[in-house]
Length: 83
Length: 198
Image 1 (cartoon, helix red, strand yellow):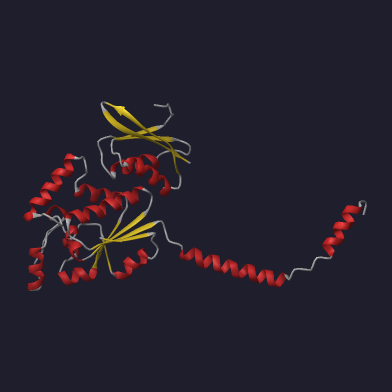
Image 2 (cartoon, helix red, strand yellow):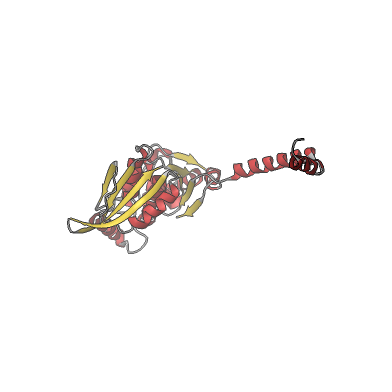
């Protein structure tokens, strides 16, 4: 896993659509410009969801998406930066 | 002139035909008017939905899309009409209604909790099964999904005409929603980027 620095983290592991983006939205609103949000999700659909989400949220930029293992589960990690 | 080059350029400029300033100004003005007209017709970042169905699975889909859109920064309007109104009911009142309206009130579910699924409902067993399966998968229950949509600022409008036909009063519906007609829907739908009929 590469080390990307982030300011706020949302743990959406175990949650299904649409919760990862709903929770991400709440945290994203409180970010300052330039800050990065990291979202952990176990929902495989979240990979496409975050790509779609940044198309709709004009001040959001998808920095990186990674797949990793945590506690024996596949976790999809999304880094979103506030422009 | 100290430089031949400049003198040549000056001559080149002076030989250019003079632009018709009045005509140009007129064209700019026309373009400005057109841009303003186009800007006023540009859709908002909005999603408009008609929720006609009173099936739990369909209403659930509507709330998932509504929450997702609202979480993506879109304005969302949901118009509940006909069977969809049953999802907004919180109580049943019969006083002052016609016989048909009373019958309709008794035979239709009161609120999300009582809705059946569109297939394999088997007198409500199907709906219970779906709820249990959603819980197993960590999907929020329909009531939580609806509350979330409202917390995210989704506009909920109940159709006045179908309320009148079915004899549903505003007091029977959940608090804090609006009542409107087709123009309320069209007013939002024509300014929307996406419109759904569910």
